[in-house]
Amino acid sequence: MEGKELDVGVCERLARRMTVDAALSFAMQMGIMPPSLYQPMYLITVGDVGVYLTIYAFVGGPAEGDRPDRKHTPNYLKIVTQNLASADEKPEWVYQTFKTKLKTTRECIDEQMA
Image (cartoon, rainbow, N blue to C red; front, side, top):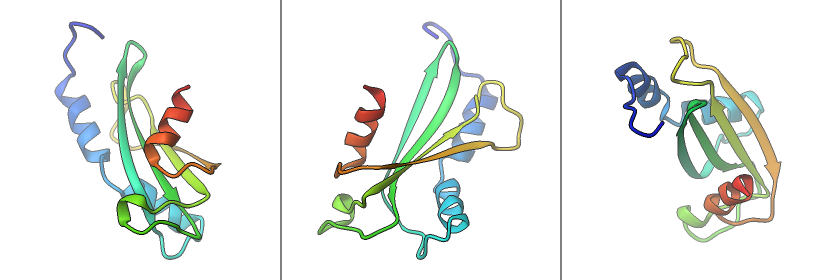
């Protein structure tokens, strides 16, 4: 998308989805109580195929780590929006969980991108 600007509607849809609501809803639907998310990270992907928001966070338990920015679990969550460049107003999400021995969300993202 070199040389192209994002349309105002795309930016508005992106901003409305950059909350923890989708991740917390997933945790509650799966019965993860309390619905804790550790090290949440948002990744915005823009390219010729569209505009997507991906949320990564550690979920479940047992949680390890001595500080909130170091807490991790054996599972992480990846949530991806539909193409926000052509999406309607109703949010759609794709949820996936992965088992891991990694300790940071950044490492999980790097693993996914490899």
